[in-house]
Amino acid sequence: MGIDFHDRKNRNSYTTRHADDAWIKTIDRLVPIERISLALDIGCGGGIYSQALANLDIKEVIGIDYSEAMLEGARENCREYSNLTFRKGDALNTRLKSKQCGFVLERALIHHITDLDACFQEAHRILEPNGYFIVQDRTPEDCFLPGSENHIRGYFFDLFPRLKEKERMRRHSSQKVTKSLKDAGFHSIEVLSFWETRSKYPAKEPLLEDIRKRTGRSILHELNDDELALLIKHIDHSLPSNSPITEKDRWTIWKAVK
Picture 1 (cartoon, rainbow, N blue to C red):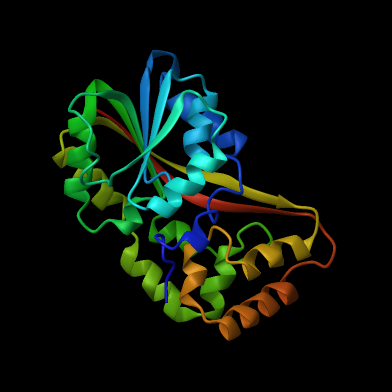
Picture 2: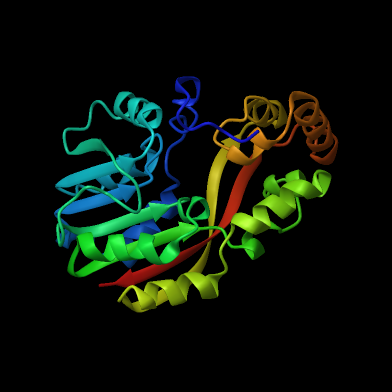
């Protein structure tokens, strides 16, 4: 089934959260934000992380996505930001000039990309000399940690092995990403693991409602309604009854310099 990123009914699927404070601090540590006049968020979706970059007082932030529906949701979500605009484009053809920006972010993007070399070559092209490139995604090792009250995604793969196989096929290894970055001409590559808080819930039911709505989790669109109901029942039985829940995901971040 899969999520249709072009369907207007999904336009707000990726607008309902805010970037984790720990993520913002990590980016601020990895990238000299005070030197950046233009930053790009490629594959921006609903603009959550474009908004976070704009809040770092970067003079200009451009969010780029290939889906008009996603861009429509992002523009609505970020309409109060004068330093943030959104344009149609994709990771292989951003439609921007060469050597135009000081910082490119590609978060939760590359698992949708089969040709990493072309993707990273485009990022290299649009970056200024000594510009910074941050890639953030999950490796197979990140994805397949056991389910727990923090790592909710683990329960998806416990119950539906076919999701695990699909996830394995679309996730790139850290070694492959690093090699593609080097081949594209990047240097000073750093790799780190990062636990990002996705959401905090006062109790279990709001989490289950998010899952019921398939909010912000594209892998859930691979399940039919009956399978989704079974997953919700499984998570309901696996989690404590009334405790607050902090949902986290483990990511890998690659930092590179042109």
